Image 1: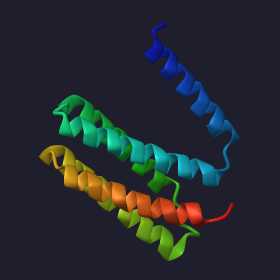
Image 2 (image 1 turned 180 degrees about the vertical axis):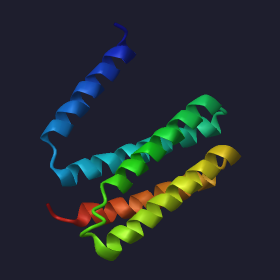
Image 3 (image 1 turned 120 degrees about the vertical axis):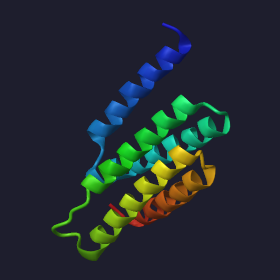
Image 4 (image 1 turned 45 degrees about the horizontal axis):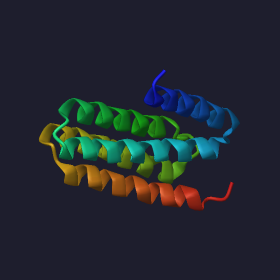
Length: 126
């Protein structure tokens, strides 16, 4: 097993361990962290002309944002849940545009929005 394969295996086991021990609040934080990480990686791939990697990473970020949307409690979340749902929908649309147009600024925009949501979520004591 080469070093990179070993590292990926460690990260998989470590992430699975963290998920098993995480509260629902922490799971949402982990999703947001994963989304920000994929966006940074997608930006790097885009800037280096790595089209396949860019598309895959943007797709993963879209999937994570979809997971955040699915986690919203529409029954009890009121206006906040509705606003977040619309914001997540907007983020996905912007990422699709970023992917099609190779637009780094759109990735930065979505990353900024996700960081803002995350900072609010992180401020909630749990």
